[in-house]
Image 1 (spheres, helix red, strand yellow):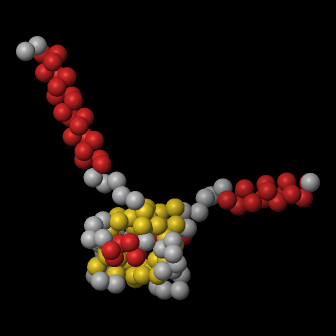
Image 2: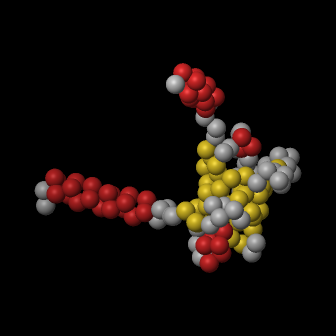
Image 3: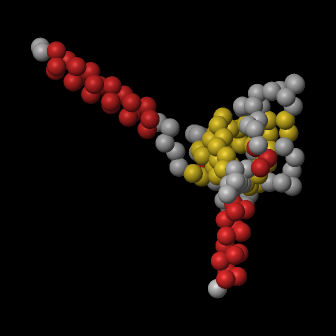
Length: 134
């Protein structure tokens, strides 16, 4: 067997392995209701419910914190995140958590945050100036 065929076969096997491993993490966005129906990992996008406190004790439990989040249907649930609290978490506009429901609590292992844009104030100023000039 020629070396080129062996190298091509190994490259093909590696590509298939990468595609399979990447496809395992592809999940759709859901709600707390859909997460309760499934027994697998789900991504839920929502907003931090400011009516409740963010609970974080960096001395006794530095690798976990909890907060309450509203999903896209407006349902609020407690979320326990099993990682240290990210910097500027409180200023996030939108939060996407990945995990699963355990009884009435969503236990997450990953979070993605959409923080307010530093250009938002500038954009609002430009829009207001444009509307005044019309």
